[in-house]
Image (cartoon, rainbow, N blue to C red; front, top):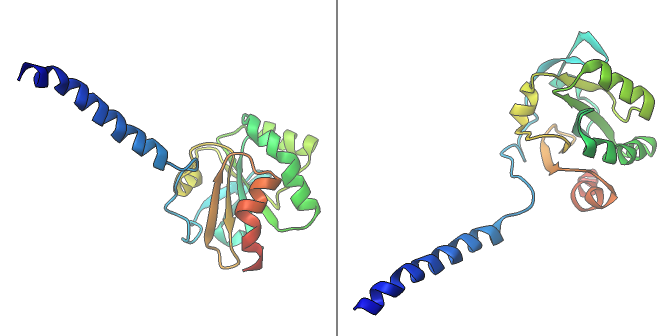
Length: 173
């Protein structure tokens, strides 16, 4: 009986390790969002380029489109910027920006200096639209289909590989 009592804590520890590792192996590297296959949320925020101009969901009219969450403080956003410029220059689809918790002046300066891949950028200083989208940080990119439905979400840098694996397939729908 004493041997069973001595081994019991070790057996429980091994079982707990197996359970924990099974949870880790089931995780995907992308964060889930409840908004996939849902309409893009309503909003009313100012344009980055003009704080007197209010933008709404109705202004995102050139569909399908990418909605790209970005900020000047986001290093990864600068990494993906050349690819977004390439998509714009190739006229693949419209890209709308969601400038997230940023300084308006710095954001406009960056776009002036490095190029502006966006049809327009929504200025979301308080992060209200980002919260509605379930954004954790920047960059995050959403593919919105021709009916205004979010079809895909990507957390991290969008590059050619991500474009081909996650977004390009929706252009032909």
